[in-house]
Image 1: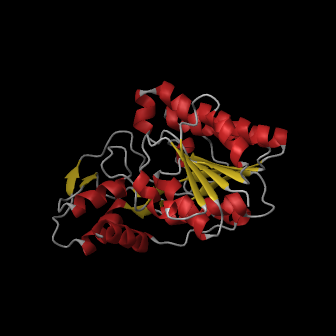
Image 2: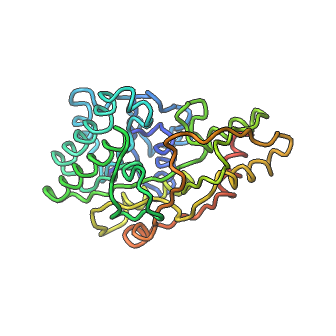
Length: 313
């Protein structure tokens, strides 16, 4: 059985995707250079005979081409990336290498070796500060960082390869993903991961503004399932879809869930609103349902509860 090749397999989303692919009975080859990924994230996968791990940098020489030639995957799920908006601003050259050049290498390896399907980790960052609510896939793209620009350019590159060479390409525009294995020690982590660390340490989080800001928070389990569907669902078209819940959750609602689990922690500290922060964000999920058969299944309370329990274990 041809495996699914997952780049960035030891990362937050990558490791959960690997777990779901294996649970579905698929063989999986994972590749990661462990720049930000963690071997402990793959503890469950490494115990499976259906999983093979390759420690390698996919941007180095012909590494990826040789790996694809050897594994002959049925699909590639390309999740390896520079995941920090702030780091993309601080080091645009690194952003180009990891978020655009790497995509080109994946597309070319798939073309050269006849891989029929590519799944790409895109982002709601391609919409930038677009005030549309909810954000549909056809909304104006206005990235405000090198990270968002590279994701948008990667979509165009991959979809162009798909049309030119007969590949099925799925671009997954993730919204605000949260869950276990997201690194709370990083200053670039999502707000939920940072809140989880603060509450676990018995410290109140900081709320900028009134806490009324909203985001479309989606569990990493749902995101991994969307990746599984994009890689394996028969007869789907190439295209780009939002991977989101379609629900706007305020930061104050998130705080209320955490406080129900940590009643001894003091209420959040308040700080002035941060300049440039987007006030509200919510994605439109209908296209993902129509094309992938995907709908988010894990609500914010259940998802946060699972995250809190995993941190306590």
